[in-house]
Image (tube, rainbow, N blue to C red; front, side):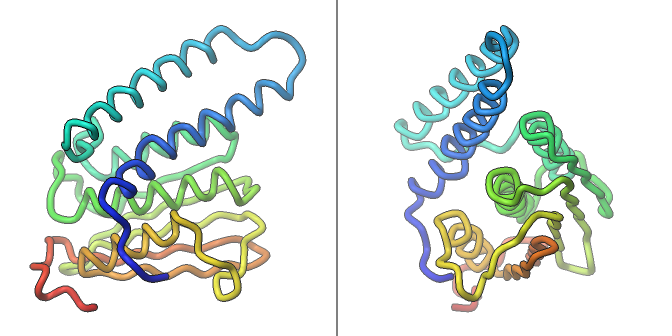
Length: 205
């Protein structure tokens, strides 16, 4: 995994594409059942489309994507897990071993985007029944892990898709690193970041 993604491509992937992918999963599940589509599903999808249209207008204006509405990293990841569990039926658990500061700080937003992508990968590709997220602070490091019990893949022989490339590029740009282990019993993603942003000249290449 190498190469840094263009900022616009990164923001579109982290926002609109992820939301549309989950909307498609929800539609596929609903269409697989007998009877008309539930009215509440239509209302939910309308809200989602309204939100993504607003996000696209935000990007067109030249602005970066804002932080999630939750007050801190652990609560934002819990909200993401709850949303994906509702959409896919995969049971997702978030364990927080940090003291939530009630605000976004340091590299929290970078961690959120990378872990969120890992959870979306689980939702779209793994056929897992369960997924677990752990967020911990260790000295001056933020350590996040995502594990699922899906069918896995072979990282060494599989061409990295856009999302994996993006996750790796974001981690390296923030002065951290990403490790992925996968096999027949599931996939384990570990992200290690400095708690505070690293000056660009100090980021290892």
